Length: 298
Image 1 (cartoon, one colour):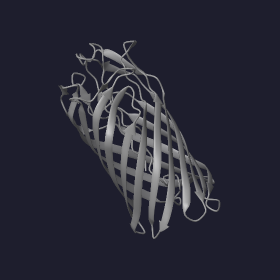
Image 2: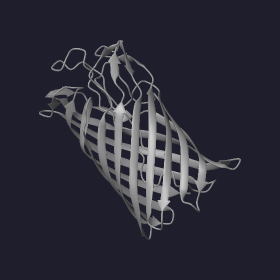
Image 3: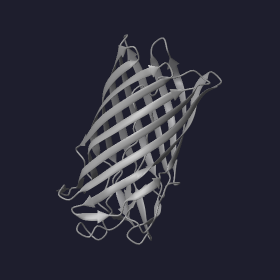
Image 4: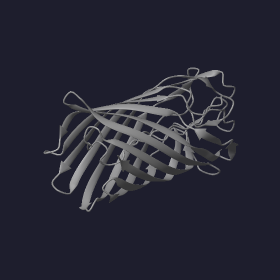
């Protein structure tokens, strides 16, 4: 299902440049089969445990800083979703709330204070203009709204909260192919509000251009509720400025993902994911990430 969180390192990094704002962003991610629908009236609770290890930072066009660079991301996310009908169209509303820690943050040996607590809350609404179970075709349109409810200290370098509103319109397709195979395709345009309490003293304005995200999974259902998937995620755009001056950051990376899931009972599913980022420019590189998800259908 959906996970969304951002990490903002909002402070000057002297060895890179006095106006430099190191930022790491963990993108909006979908898991396989998310847009294969459930009947109206279904309520789903999903719990996530995530860990990410970042070992490299690269400014736009700059060198790779891997000596003395680190960031450990530990998050839990609670998500509640409900399906219902609007006339003859299936719809869904949901809310996601992360909580966690950002630990051992370093860039080229310069350390930053850790952050812990609640992240920003995300609300979402989805409709399925195409919901064809016979043809195994499901087309969903989503709007995600992330509001600045998370922990943010303008004088602290690293924060779980972003101190800005983020809008994410999304289109997603799930297409079954025969009895066992299926394909997931997703595209997003992520629009960022301004953070007006950024910079080393919390008195500057951070702006960011829109990001574009693409995701894909090829899935195989083995039977008895067990599935495996291999996926790709790509992120582009998102160039940042601090008081109108480029700060060397944007959202560019590619990621390969491996996922397996199993329905332990008809109502309870466990899912695990292993991922790795490459081709990173303008931020941290996540060398390895793990996700465990539990899903319960009411």
